[in-house]
Image 1 (cartoon, rainbow over the protein chains, first blue to last red):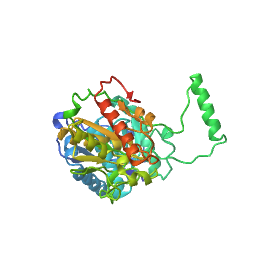
Image 2: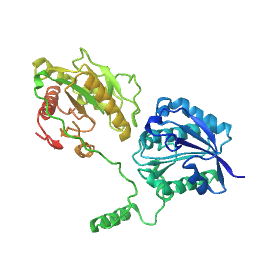
Image 3: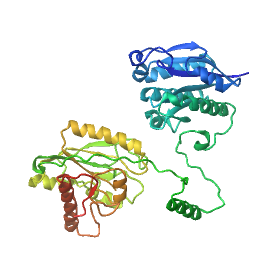
Image 4: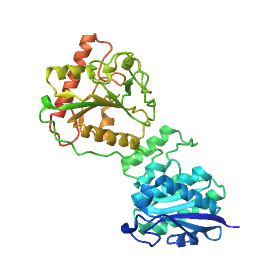
Length: 348
Length: 63
């Protein structure tokens, strides 16, 4: 008997309409709709799309949890063995919806799921660690390539076969590092890679580095004597006891702390939450990481307008770039709202 | 303000002040308390100078 599959798509791929129909509420249709037709061909007689869940992109974005729960419910009702969502290519809301429903169904029902997204779709960074995501092109022109990959990855999971390395399966990396055995030791592999690089020949890295971005420089502060300066740190300085439980590595949050009237960060009043470096010196005198004492002096002398009465802190140790970026955006917003002109960011 | 300048360069920071050491970027426990605070002040003043200086790309303020 064929495996039963439920398929999630948005209003556009269902043929309901574009942006003007992005608010449409969910509906479930039996059988295939839109790209489900091509998936049906790729799945062959091993699996059958029994129902299609359709939801407008804005409706999903505004009701993420409720719609995810409805998809879980539909999967239950149709006794689905698996879920396919998308492909969503580089459509941000749709991609986030596809990845979200995959994660929700996987968590609730523990059945195979898969979606297909463009590498930079925001859904990727949100869910890449939880669900398999086929790497798709940035537009629907990539449908022809994404569909067979989706079918293959789903059938493999349904049959209980292990998925191979991301590059072999056409999947985006989950970021898992696995021990491998090689004939050649690491030093030899590294040197032969370097020689290839020097010759300009292609080579495949064993551990891809994340891509870093560039920032347009801001104009300088015109008059430091009237400027409000804030302190932000990735060195983990927090009030003693670490009230917000910022993790010693792979931080999941940042803290915001009032230092009104504080002229010096004293041992026993403040500490570092940071792992990975010897905390002795930072705990003895937290000003060694967050220079509140000096900035208070400069404030008193009139060299700066004022020290912003709130500082922000997180831990840099092993924290994901995407996470750090989201902290930065939120901290930046709060500093801007508080009319801070410049920030000194200290790191350990 | 950071000790590992290449990391700050890799993430796109534009005004960079190199600091003392990872566990005590703005201090040096081997100095007397007065000398240590003077060192910290010198570094913070350099950061303020960096913030007051126009830059058109990534700039390391060594002095």
